Length: 421
Image 1: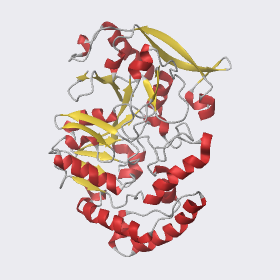
Image 2 (image 1 turned 90 degrees about the vertical axis):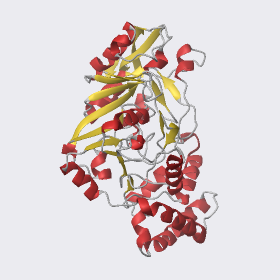
Image 3 (image 1 turned 90 degrees about the horizontal axis):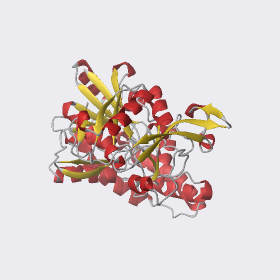
């Protein structure tokens, strides 16, 4: 039996979708345990190109059963759209995708409030995805949430009435338009009927699987440094993103997590506001042009920077990483010189990530070391030895700094463009 947690070691967008899709071939269960549809994972395989937000990225492995734990907040419309998309593509999820009835629902007022709060903050906006994630998690811990279990009796309608009485007052105060009870009730009753065949209590599935020595592949949403406690608060997400969240969000006891694979991009990106110490501001530089990406969830242009080893090192220590999956190494091809941040300084003294808060991190001075690049196209490399010498040195440099071996290297966006080392 093995329980493998796949986490992002940076600010998300590390390529976890591809990594999970690649690793899922040997898994019995693939599971999401945190976050919501603010996480977007891109998967490219024989079925096509997919941008997935709620269904586990490992669902393409035909022998794997997908699980969405109670720690995941669900936008029903997005979930239904993904299920229908996968079924149309020939990836039949019926009978092998189960959703915890304990999961909380993103309601229309959550998305409205998310946008109104951001606008009210003005220049101090957090840079959320406006998917309602923060407000739904706030309701979850404030005893105001609505779960799938509420649809079984009269609880849904009574709870919805109460919440609309509360939320409409806030919406109106912030200049928004109040929601009608009948419209929301009917819409979500319709969602429930479509999702109902996929709802099942996961506790016995998980516990029986552990006892039967099954393999679980746990898919983290977001990235380590968007964690509510350990990330760059307040520029973070609303859920815990480190592997321990699988205990609450899926019912996996911590002692069963045997491996933690840290997906690490060969450079750094970030969406939205918040500190990015290695950010590249020169839009005309070769690195800026190469690193430019569009976020799978929001369509926003990602901010880009050089690889930050202090971030990767901290993620390794915080989450107990046992292996690294290095992604997008191919993007560095063609750069004559590659800068890597090896640490931070503040007021002339060395500091670590944990020594400063988000506002302090915005003021640190990155300490850079230069590495020679390579000109070869590495997209067709099938083994580590086939990589250019400087690309090999780059991978070794990362594992030496993190104290964690690099076991997989992505040399392209497709599943098969992965070196297993």
